[in-house]
Every structure is written in structure tokens, then in C-alpha cells.
Image 1 (tube, helix red, strand yellow):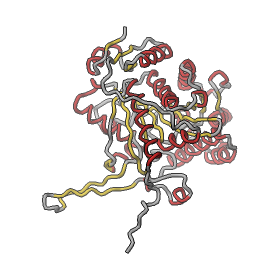
Image 2: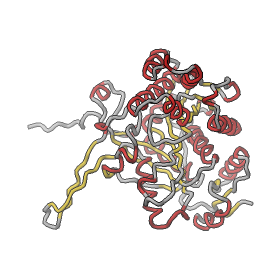
Image 3: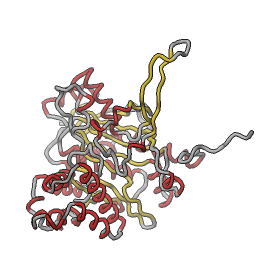
Length: 429
């Protein structure tokens, strides 16, 4: 009998140049983030089933969510004679952020909040049991890799700026032209407020959030969004809403522009949330990061709580929509901590590693990646916040070019000395 010699559908063998490229890209991104003060975390590929329960991640942890997307694993515990003495329901991890949140809770349990803020990076394989049509058509795989970073324990807008700045720095570090990269900014609170006022139930809210994702993605591709908007307005019963609420939904689905061209919005959308997006966009502009405010960007992951972003690359001969994405998730860590522990703010993003490698091949940048691994820098400098993130991150960039590890401090000024001691850093006064 001939034993099948191909992996299951949705899995693939990666060999030679393709394998080397994935390895080099991962190492180059690791080194870049190390230079900015990030610590490396290796995650197990199996999580407890409870880590992805509704109580933790909500009803739709990521776009196109279905609970059958997870690949379950039953772990049996054996004694020394291999008799079963217990079992655990687990699953192969479908993404990295939840595992990072779960890990942080173990650190808080041991050492308390004095360890915060923390800057973490990870590279992990992820597994999703995609539908067979997607696998046959080659749109997706059941196994892929994420490279991501998370800033844990900081609510500072500096953390928002740093997250989006490093996405672009990473792509440029790999050979992507900076002017070809666009960050689309949104805030999930705008959608949530309209959904609540429109009295949408949970199912309708999830469905409409998914439609907003489709609108934002289609617009980024340059496709017509009319069909998705029609479905959205039908589901929210648009014609029964008052005129100002109608205008707000229209703004939410239509507005996609730079902060200096933002039109007058419905009064229902006038809030600090929009002002924060404008401020964030201006800070990014000062750091040579192109951004637009796209109010349809909601990222249907239910664990996001405020600012969200998606990143696209428009190279002359190749376009990749959502090569990276992420946002702020200020409540995800809480379910893993003791009930009396206050919520821990956090923000992060992830690249799809294979998607990045495909882009580099298409734009002929894959042969020019350079990196040098450094585990012990001559010196690590810590930069206090001056109140001007543009100048602070420019200064940090100059220090990195001089050979330092440069870490912009994201916590309260009163704890900077303790953070410096913990991270063997010299405070740059």
C-alpha cells in the first residue's frame, strides 16, 4: 500500500528559498523591534478551549468568524504506565493576541502591576479550519504565521502612535517604499454607539460590523461598496431612523479621507473619539506615516475597545490590502486576572508573515533584506515622554542608528526609574 505523501489540505511544505525568506523576514522584524525596546515572547501552539470562550473574546473574535474555524485538540494526561488520568479540551491557537493576554495575567499574578508597561513581540504559527472552498481556491491556508507586537499596560496615546509607526518602520525595513504604505484609522466606539442607539440586537450588531469590514476593505481595493451599504441600511432599518441618526450611519459608512479633509460629521459622531483620531493622524504625519481616517474600519474582533487600524501597501506593480492590522483592547486581559484586578489597557498589531513574503517577492525586495542580531546592546537608552511624540520618536530613531536600543517610556513618569532599573536602561534626560 502506498501511503499518501501530501500534507492535508490547507497545509504545505515550505522549502529552500521560500523557507529562508520567511525565516529572514521574521528575524529582521525581531531585530527591529528589539532595537525599539521589545522583549521576545514564544507562545505555545495549544491553548485551553476556555481562552477563546465567548466570555473572553466575544461572539466574533475575528472577521469571518465561525466557531468551527478553531481546530480542537484533546490532551490526555497519562501516568507512567500510560493510563489516562485526566484530559483537557484545547485548540491550536488561531491568533496570537489572546495568548499574549493570557500570558500577561500569569506575570501580573506573580509580580503585580509593577511590571507594567511591557513591550512584547512574538512570532507564532496560527491554525484556522477554513472552509474547503477557500482552501481549494487557494485564498487561505489552515496554517499561517503571525509576527506581532503588543504594548501592555499603557493607555498613553504614545502607545497608539508607536504601534502604527512601527508597522510602517517594519515594512520599510524589509524594503517596502514608505510612500506606498497607508494606515487606515478608525474607532470601534463610533460604531458601537450608533448600534446601541439604533437598538440593534447582538446578532444584528455582529452582522453589521462584518458589513462595515466589507465596506472598508472594498473601498481600499477601489471596488464599489454600494451592495454592502444596501445590506447595511436594510439591517439597521435605515428608513425608520431619525434624520440625524441616518446621517451618522451615512458618515460612518462613507467617510474615508485624510484628517485635513475630514467633512462636517453628524452631531452623533462629534466626540473626543474623532478628535483623538485626528490628533493621532497628525502625529503619524509628523513621523512620515501616511494615514487616512476611515470610519468604516471597525475590525470585527469583539475584543477591540477603541482605536483600530488596517494597513495597506500600494506598490506600483502590486497591491496588498490589510497586510497588517490591530487596535486597542483594554478589556481582553481582565478575564484571565483575579476579579478585583482593574482592567489593563493594551494595544498591538500583527503581520501575516506569508502575506509579507508574497509582497516582497512581487515587488522584488526579497533579495535585499539585511539584519544583524544583537542580544546584548552596548547600551539601552530610555526616553521620557516630552509631550511631543513626533520629536521623541525621531530622537529614538537617531539613537537606534547610533547603535543603541531606544525605548520610549509609555508609563507614568513616577515609575520611570523602576522601569529603567528593570530593563537595564539609562534614562536620557
